[in-house]
Length: 183
Image 1 (cartoon, one colour):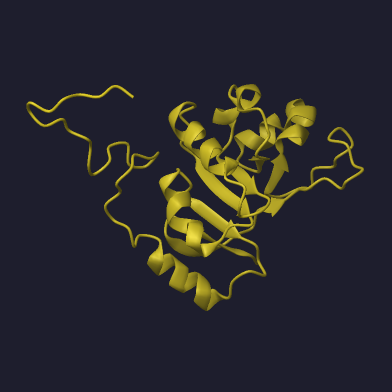
Image 2 (cartoon, rainbow, N blue to C red):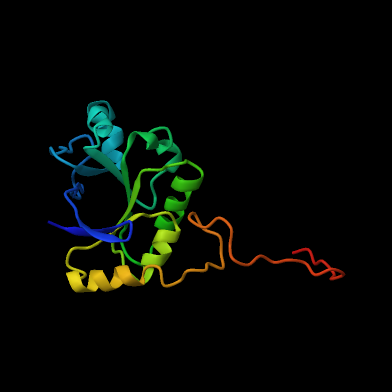
């Protein structure tokens, strides 16, 4: 069974990620039984049939970097789990999606980073609002995941605001008598 880091612990994961084949349409997709994360476009195509399964916590949705969050906003509360796909580690759109889900849309369920999720990014992912990190199964051994968990909270005093730390450690404070410069 695949493993993931959830709330700072390594746990087994029974969720399957449904991905469409290149020539498969969302309408033609078959959503298997069990816990499954479906792409947003599949959710939108099969919403009426999947609503009950989502309410029971059997179906979650995963978002791509170019998905329209406004179109998903009305449904976000339906899910106990929402995943954000990182197709490659250099694609940072998932950080913005996570922050928006937590702050603007008030999502409080499990927010999972999937795809090309690297150890060096774990701290930043958690600061963006992710509470579950699922690197590719072939990426890390159990020992490497344990070491990664130990390093997630290496940076305890953030200098910048984030979804999990809205107030940074330091703020720019004008000194008395200092000239203010507009930028």
